[in-house]
Each structure stands twice: as structure tokens, then as C-alpha cells.
Length: 134
Image (cartoon, rainbow, N blue to C red; front, side):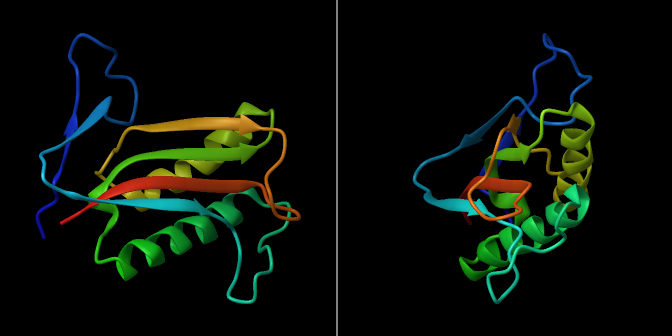
């Protein structure tokens, strides 16, 4: 499946980052704006309480489920924002590594943020995304 998303790299900026600097979508295209994927199971319970990596895995599985329901996949993601409820950069890196594992070679532009709190009880991780449907 071809994606309408073309990732942009820039040789005048550092190559030491593991994400593209931008994404271009040739119009016309249909956009998919995903609510933040949360570490909730099918019953609405927060999984992996206290475990950044465990929650990141659940978040990414939930995100992929929504993409698939809309007929898309991770290579259709144009950008993401990754939220981690922590002021410790090591926790952010743990989550980022799990996130990158799921995106593989598709290094969509993304922002990684440490925040003070997220919406659900015991929630440590959330990922929101914008995708372009093929």
C-alpha cells in the first residue's frame, strides 16, 4: 500500500535525530486526526501501572488499532505528539524507544513532551497522531 505521506529530511540540520523534520501530503487527501491513544485495556482500565514501557506498548497497540479501523497503517502517519507524565528525561527516552519500535523505518515528525499529569488515573503515556488515508 502506497502512502500519501512523504517524509522530509534536511541536510542543513542535524542528522543525529531519529525522526523526519517534516511530512508533505499531496492534495487531495483525506486526513485522520486521532485522539490521544491511552494505556487502557478493553474494559477501560489503565494497564501497566507505574511502568512507562508497558504503558507505551499498550498505547501503540491502541493507536494501531484505530489506524487499522480507518484503513490506515503506521506509514500513513504524518505527525505525532508523545506525552509522558514525567520530568525525568530517562522516562521520556524509555517511551520514545518503544514508540520508535512500532513505527520502524517510518520516522514521522514528532514532538516528545514531559508533562505533569495525564487524564486517566495512573496514566503515564499518551500518543496523538495525524494520518493521511491512502
